[in-house]
Length: 582
Image (cartoon, rainbow, N blue to C red; front, side):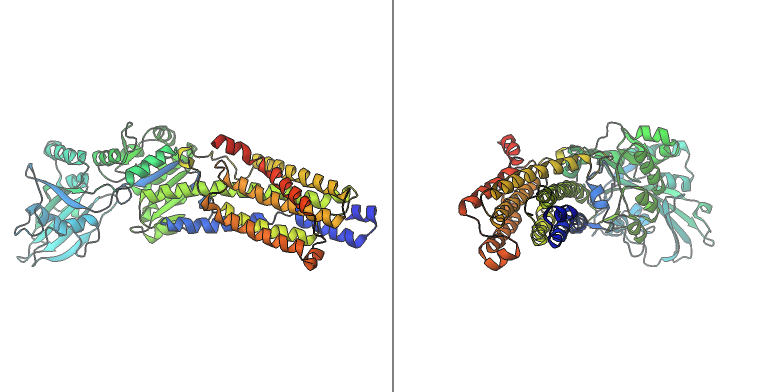
């Protein structure tokens, strides 16, 4: 303002020139772009069955380097069917639902199931057998961390008390007080069932004639057998694992199942099983440094307790990984909080897990998580392009508002023109850049470095270079035009060049390495560009609007030259990409 006032002596015009420069230099699009991208990103993730609870995690999701997922319900369908029985030293097939006499092992197992079953394994058992009609449930001892078994006490018609237990084989062995020799054949059968990928529960029975014990350990149990459940792999699980591994994302399976079962399912899903399996008992015996070292190779974890997930998260973070962790139980909340990306199960997750998580997986599927990573990478790349574009386009706007004043030439930009440009920039940023599809190779590249900034020195330099080229081209056109035509006509032609350069830079920056300008997916850009062109023509051809913009209708030849200048000032960015694609 001071420079204009001293050079030209018109302080009112000087105030307008100062306001113009101030408006031109403020990149008010930054908060708008961030807000719109996060909001639309959450909407897009929701369409992929990923509900966003914390918007900041959207940008983090694309940089995930490790996915820690459950087995049951995430890699598998969590649709259990009884596939095999082992009792009295021999294996047999389960009875059918319409069988007149269910297998005795299943009858005992049904006595340890909930009256109104919700758990898939309980449903699978009760579909084949039911407790005796004259039995009355007296007490239930639920699953506990220190006792991985469910025990239920029933009062029979003869007033005898019957205890039924089902759970992890180790827990049932302890209840039955089996010696190493007695447990050996059972362990061999258990290993055989687990190697087939079956989830195995052990069943025990205890009979007492006196009062209900305070704890199951006070009763004497007799081992009855094993029940093997088949839980088919999700149809999309193997493809999701393959896509994640191609993208450089490590997929780790964490389950409470038997190690052999976990390895079988991991192998079916395509996980890396060369390093074997790490059990919860082994995790408990490792310090932080030793655990971090093991995590460099191991991808399968079995017999893991919920609280041990936190130790895994901390060890992975110590290794510099960006961790996405799934969980569904109350005890999973600390691990979900500690992970960079906590993901709660929507179908079977507890309220506590959902409150602790950043994302809620509505269909509990690994494919949805991998799809979220793909979308996160897309959002990150498009957001970086949009911010680079905002930086680039403010260089010529600010420069063209300031340079003519300092050079003693008539001002090229006034506030109304800058506002017009902002009305073009804002929808371009919000719609064109956000709507750009993922790069074809986005999931064949490794995750970005956790230390990489969203908008750093490289992006600022790139934007400044792009903007400087447009500034030099349009300023040269304007100063040249002033030598042979009135200022209002020169201003009109230069403004056309600036608008064309603005739109050309938008499409070249948005397409990235793609280089496809006429792709049908970019109809939004051409709609905005067409609308801007129509408004610009109205401004140039309508005397009242032209006067408001301090412009006059230029000659047709100068308009063609202005359009060519605008195209060339930003089109040079596109040519190398097009040549490389060709």
